[in-house]
Image (cartoon, rainbow, N blue to C red):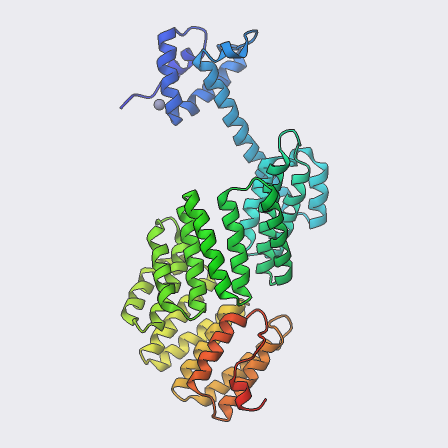
Length: 455
Ligand SMILES: [Zn+2]
């Protein structure tokens, strides 16, 4: 292998003492060696300070300057340095912006030239995306500030098409933040606005795919699972065209999740396994999500040994995730224990998962776990426990800001049916479907067991 260039050689190369053949060899090496390029950049900076840097290019026409390979390298170093400093500086502005109120953020964006940079925009968007899961309100406001920032980007440097492309990515984050905060209509209008930019702006395939995936998530939340699945497949095609494997895997996991919710466990399983095959060991979060769908599907399909093997393969992932991940693991184990007939142990596991979700105020998986527990109790005719679980759940759902108006009523109907001993197996499937589709928004028709008791 070719040797790296020593500091002394670098000093000679970029000062006036070098010979032509030495320069040619050194330039060829530096251009293809990132390590020597970094070292050369520091040497160039030092030579420039003492006035020993050659060539300076001063007084010569630009086309002449680049005949000396060193000038081209120096120009490349400068571009790299500017780009890197742009990012570091952007992050510093981000540190300040994230602490401000939405109003203050807007004021700062309008008034501070140093913020009106593409790097600052990109930093805000990246961090807002990351923040979405934890604090969707803050993420939405940051993305709004980024959207406002686009208006202040210099028009000479950024065409209207480019600006609209940037506005689209800000609007996508706004939509996702609103969705995660349960603001369904707000999320819908942000998506419509983003689609307007899609028509006018310079938008990459991956950005377009990401917008479709957020729209698909919104439809999934609203119980329109089939529409969501079809949007996800459109997004998958875009990621495929862009050669984005991680994007494809993410879409397959999203599709698998929706398929599972739509009672299509077999397809969910295949789709999640496809996704798993595309992941590398670095995609920890995606692997966890894929494996959760795989385990759940295998349980539903009655393939319990495979479910257990898959769950065990994900053990280290559950340990790395936070509390909510841990409760999800408990829930899956409760279902496995239940399916194998270990009633007492499954009850403990269900209880612990449900309490965990409730305390963490994680609504949807908590509700799904409650009903899975109900089904487990019902199957072994523990009707008294079923009724107590209903009562406790109703009490929770009647607290302000926990559920839509229909949800406590449906559980009340379930309670009435179980107390009247008229609840049947097929009612359970009905309720399961209802919860998968209507945990966020009321249904046009409530599950049929309510009619059976005449309430
Ligand atoms: Zn080297």
